[in-house]
Length: 177
Image 1 (tube, helix red, strand yellow):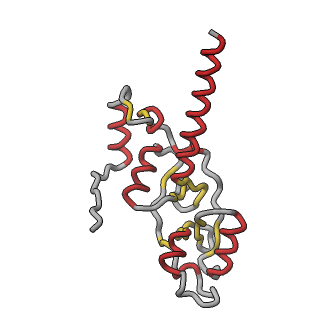
Image 2 (cartoon, rainbow, N blue to C red):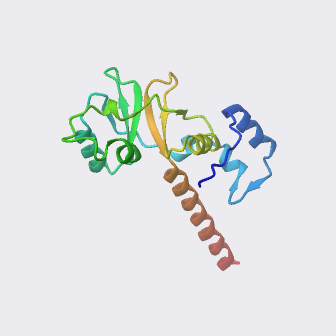
C-alpha cells in the first residue's frame, strides 16, 4: 500500500515570505537565495504549441520531432487551454486511440496550473510537487498566453551546472594559492 505524503500547500506570497525570513538558512544543497529567485533565471524555452483540434498522431510526431516531454495546447486565438505530456499519452491515450485522429483536446490536461516569469523557483517546485506533474507552463502578464515552459529537469540542470562551475572555480582557487 502506497502512503502519500501530504505537505502544507503555500501560495506564492507565503512561500516567498518564508524564504525571505530564512535568508541565511540552507535546505540541503539548495539555499534560500536560489529558491527565492524567479523562474526567469532558468531561461524557460518557448513552448512548442499545438491547436486543440490537432490529431493525437500529429501531436506525438511534434513531440518526437522537437524531443519535448510536453506541448502546450492553444485555442484559435493562441490562448493556453491545456497541456499534453508523455504521461498523458501513456495514461490516457495508449491502447485507446486507433489511428490517432482524435483531437488532442480529448486527452490534454485542461486549464493547467501556470506560473509567471517573476514567481520564485521554490513556488514552481512546490506547484509541481503538489500537482504531481513535471512541466509547468510560464504565462504572460494576462495569464492567457504561454511564453515558456519549465520542467523539473530545467531546475536540476541549472543546479548541476552551477555546482560544477562552483567546484571548478574552487579547484582553480586552490591551485593558484
